[in-house]
Length: 437
Image (cartoon, rainbow, N blue to C red; front, side):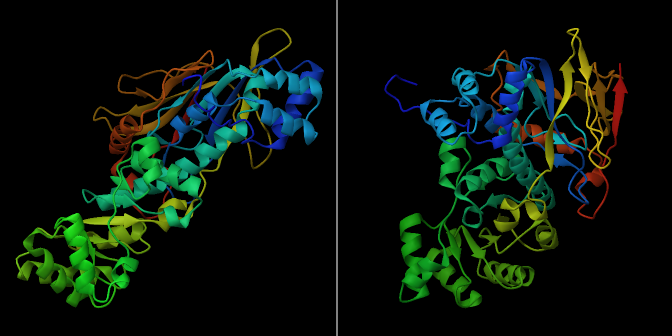
């Protein structure tokens, strides 16, 4: 960034009030600088799901680089009386200087998987809780739903088009997460600019309704965008619209889109109509409140691809991954690290710094999530380490490229037992096993 470039927006106040009051009390008591380990994990998967997909790690790292308390942030905290002057002075020079490791973006995860491990002082690490969880919980929920959808779609492409069904910022994050989990494109242009997600789109019903006739609308679209465009054919009568589309674009018509009615029946009727006229290469795209179950039901139909909106950007019934961020290890009075854990009856956590490995059989099929406590788990010869270094001494060393994450997810899902991609309700497809030092 050049000296004249605008400063990146601070992410420091994308947090909860109590992170700062904890900091103030810990600073005042002298305990704030104890070495600590925090871990982000999910105690369980969403009800009935067999696996989850990590997404948002790259966004966490980007947000961490902008986690700074500048003049505006400090002035707000002072004026609102959130923390005292010594705490404000400490925050003014805040820079995360610890280490972070975790599951690489796109990796499948299971209950208790240590998806992000933060090693730092208490003061530095506690401030990151809300930021980490708000990003990981959202993006992971979207990617987990997207993975079920792309699995159900098989080799047919899925396009993310949910921007109009969620918050504008969430729409960009959702498009990124969906791409990691196998979607081929998004309708959201900001996601294309910011994250490099391919973009796609043609026209809505409003375009057809603008013109005095459907023929005029189709003609205008084809003349402007070319015969390879996608024409929306359900504004009035589908059969009539398909005939018009073929008359105007001929055999070179790229695709028609169906957005209402019984999509399976309509797709079969339209396919027959197209083929009878010689438009055998014209594709049929379907939209209209699709989710993984609707996509699976359309597998028997002559559908070329799916546009998915509302269900995707809301996690298809699981809008959060229910991840938590817990202190699992701290420095004791003698300078040694000791495990700590919450003992609440229904919210138990497991103390100790953790590492994870995917245990696989000789064919490369996953058998278990093996978590070592206090040391790395033992590799029996076919296992795959899951943790990667993300931040070293405060510097981001792996920004988690989304194209690499996309390929990683494809490979990670492929190594799970076949039952993992079934849409029927079930337990996690592999167990989580602990190994202690």
